[in-house]
Length: 419
Image 1 (tube, one colour):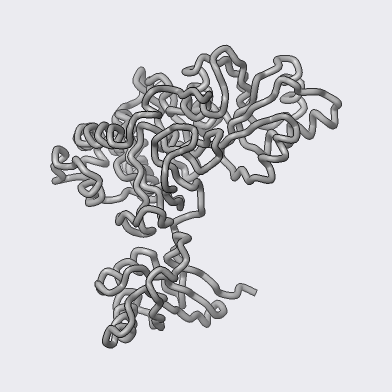
Image 2 (image 1 turned 60 degrees about the horizontal axis):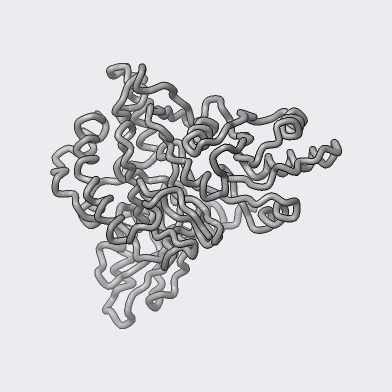
């Protein structure tokens, strides 16, 4: 029998959607008033009117690169001492016990809420229960990963050994002595630990479960751990947003967290794609301390049909499927996914498009493959003209039947030879 972290996981889809959308106007108003950055980004937006996904989709997407640029600008200009670029709704002191750094650098606040990063749900789904000891090998320095997992484990009622990274032999000896019920960290580091334990002749019989993040967790590695008595599950979280989705015992995609609104949009745009189509994950968090509205993760994924066989009713995604930023340089000019979208939007006959760049460097050719009905007068010639207008480059057009382009989220495919 499967048990759940809380009743939110099994509520009806309609109930969940109504609750998320009911909370949305207040969160947007809060972001406008308490976050200087979103006060500017959402200037003129009537928060009370954002009560549907269609209305949400009209708001601008803020991507990590923009957040980083605003943070850097505010630090250089010493704007109110706001190292967070105006995105944080709380400041240094009692309301922010820790601040972390991600590569960039991008600085992220940690608030005081219990299970601030909402990781407990994923840890629970991985099989951890109150009263157990968890060996946490995520980093406790600079990045928030160690704290993210520790606060989630504490919310469940677990004790945590802060193993951190490195010192493999000491990690093995600590596991031998403390006999943890499981491990949290990257799968590659646990593999190193298990191999080191075997080399040292140290048994780790208590280690039967694991929750992984930060890296890919392919089936081959999952099976490798199972052969050694360790059942591992993965989660998808970021330093900006906390938990986004998590794996369950069904192993059929990742179930979304209960406190985020997730959209999948066409790369380079803010336009939601059809269900099942690959696109960029855009997340709106209900976190009042760091109220990110339509935050573009830069990661590709797609929605899976139906519900999780475990009985959890939230939407499932396929997991990480690559990066959405496909900007490429062609004949000395940068071409962005947003430009491809601009070309497509000029023609109602075109449903989807994929720009294929081929040839050798300095001798590039551009082919825009578009899905459209055949027989439209001069459509190819008109699109070629639009390509020149938008990109300032010449490109050819291939008309394809609807549904024939690959569903992999790619708007620009770089097929050039780099030999």
